[in-house]
Amino acid sequence: MTEHLPDDRIAECVSGAPAPAGEQHLRECPQCASEVARLASALGHFRDAVRGLSEAQSASALARARAAHQRPKSRAWFRWPVLAAVALALAAAPAYRTVRDRRQAAQALADAQLLEQVNREVSESVPGPMEPLSQLVSWDSASQDSSPSSTASSSQNGEIR
Amino acid sequence: MQPVASAGFLADAAESPARELDDFDALVRKYWPRVFRFALASLRDPDAAGSVAQDCLLKAHCNAAGFRGEASVATWLMRIAVNLVRDHARSRRLQFWKRLGAGAVDWDDLVRRIPQSGSGPETGAAAREQVERVWKAAAGLPERQRTVFLLRFVEEMDLLEIVAATGLREGTVKAHLFRALAAVRRQVGGAG
Image (cartoon, rainbow over all chains, first blue to last red; front, side, top):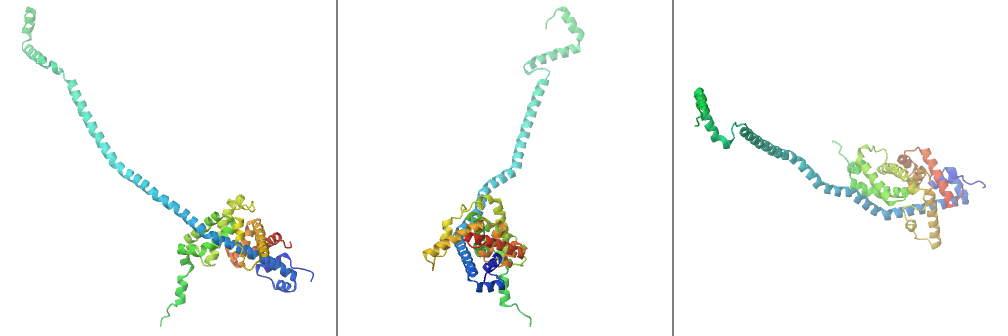
């Protein structure tokens, strides 16, 4: 036998799906059979090594993945108080505004009353300390109003009352 | 007399894929090792592999309604894992496959996993050398060839399962597999 299996036939045999002609050739050609056995052996060692490595690291990788998956949850627990505080502040805002508005309204009323009092005092024709004098003046005025001609004549006469 | 459901029917219903996907803890217990193994062999980074495996199982669990039962749950999961590995590898391509032997997986740790029973020191050394060469050859494969290669020779999936897991046609899967084997064969020291 001079011709050996080509690469694709060797690959078929190693893959476990040899064509009938390939199987026949392997039975008759020790060199090709050895080549297939050598490659299959290398692949078997490779499979065993990868599986062993995976088994050794699988559990720890799963633990790390679970820890990483749970980490956001633990952060969420820390977020709850903050979220609750924000919600409380938002809920209390209308009540705070009501109290503040009431205070502002009371202050405005007091200011208005004070302003009204000031206006009243300012608008008085005679200041408080001069009130007694104004009473005298008004009495004089009243008498003048009753006899204006007599007042004029008294002044002209140089009389002082 | 009305027919009654057999015990076998009830058992099948209890183990139906939909229910299997609904129970996330059971899904993790049963399929984590396999999905993680494929991701680890593909990405060579335990952290990245764990992340991919977690995403894969979560996606499967959240999209259980989309599982039509055309393939097994394992094959469906591998299809999700293949896509996730592809996305992950593409996003971090320069960090992994361009640096032979410098991946996150400890090479000494890998070769320690080769079974030693029944083999002498010389045979063990030869096996370690073979594993190293296959490992390096797999590192140099194009993405699809590597995926098909790992599904066939690490996960031991048959061609039709690989077709279902990759979404490739059978002829394409064969072509990728044969090219990958030719590259591995060259690295291991055969003809080619």
